[in-house]
Image 1 (tube, rainbow, N blue to C red):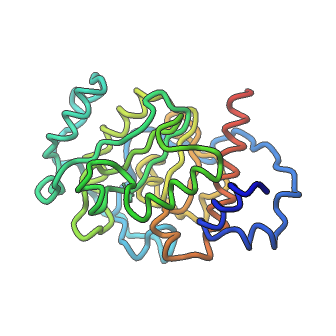
Image 2 (cartoon, rainbow, N blue to C red):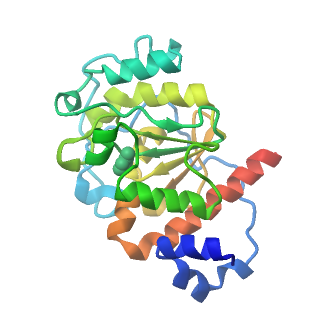
Length: 264
Ligand code: URA
């Protein structure tokens, strides 16, 4: 293992696990590119996702009927990058706009092969207008580096909701639904080869179904024909160190999947 890789895995809290399990000696089989379930790209799953259920912990949330109360979708699919970002920054489609400092559209390479989708901006992101710049963002950067990726280089980072939920609560289904056309448009513009869903709200928004991270990991899902890998959210990993090794497995799975996609 190179010193750099060693340092990155240490940063992720993975280095001892990596060595103990001797994973580098094992060959990595190429994943079969097969969607795990039919997943229409029509919008997020119904049902409020409680923060105590985030990232696979706890029971399934009770579905409730929610619908976007404004039709953000109108015209969004025709927008180019500048118009899309302007629309996001001025969006008032849900209540999150009332307490944001600024909307956070996304950042990175607009022609990236990799798209990472988080949950929603936190306090630092709301302040700076860029996704994943706080503590979870530092871990995300380390996770990217562990598979030789770098923010902005063949990677785009976006969130399922573009405005900060107050007190960093989990976005509600109606908020996810209201914001979803923006993510859809970003995906259509970027045309990534692979999407990595970080945490449950992102996975549910992309896969349009109830998701438990523990069950959804290790499979290739699909969003409108684009393969989706599901893993834990970096903020969850900061609180649940024991799952970092699983996230590492997921990243390796994503990297193998990408290789398969590039050579298909
Ligand atoms: N968590 C997220 O899901 N997104 C961010 O941008 C920051 C923290």
